[in-house]
Length: 206
Ligand code: SF4
Ligand code: SF4
Image 1: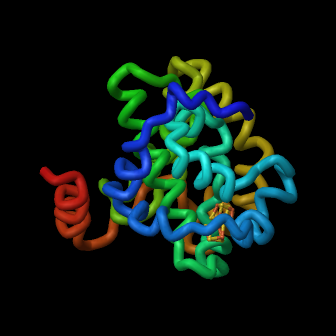
Image 2 (image 1 turned 180 degrees about the horizontal axis):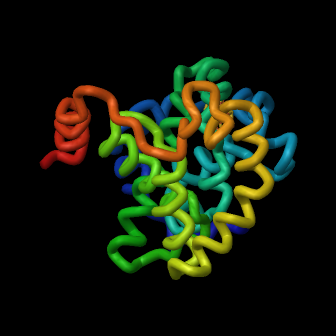
């Protein structure tokens, strides 16, 4: 990718350094250990976390924030465990994703990946129930992803007829679940959801 020197943003690395998880960005010395051990590269050979870090250090803000590869990291932290410079690579990528989301909220960027919608729906269920509630997550996520309730429910049913059934048969959710007939169908709350609410308020600075 050609470097447009006139578009470089020398402050971009500071933006990342100031986000939680981005603190060790500048310790990277580009050895590529992170990329060599990343399991995503087996599915997407062009995926390269080292390159995303290099572009960030160079100040290629626009290219990094609009890079669809930002959204395919599985946060497995293999790269973090192996980095000789203690760069928390998975968290650095999360810090960059947060900057991208802020840019989208400000109307400066369009994120094509549905991942932010999924992550928000996931967090909403954890905030409300203290644990993951698959059906609640799906009922929030699919309509938002598809831009409507009917199309969302259709897309959900389509996906669930495949992996939903597999999860049910393995006792992970649904009527065949291992801890009661309605495991995963009805929400179950932890006892102290008020504690969970306080954690979310603190993280969000409310
Ligand atoms: S393993 Fe660490 S030092 Fe090496 S390229 Fe990745 S982030 Fe940089
Ligand atoms: S955390 Fe992301 S970038 Fe790092 S090894 Fe896992 S999938 Fe790859």
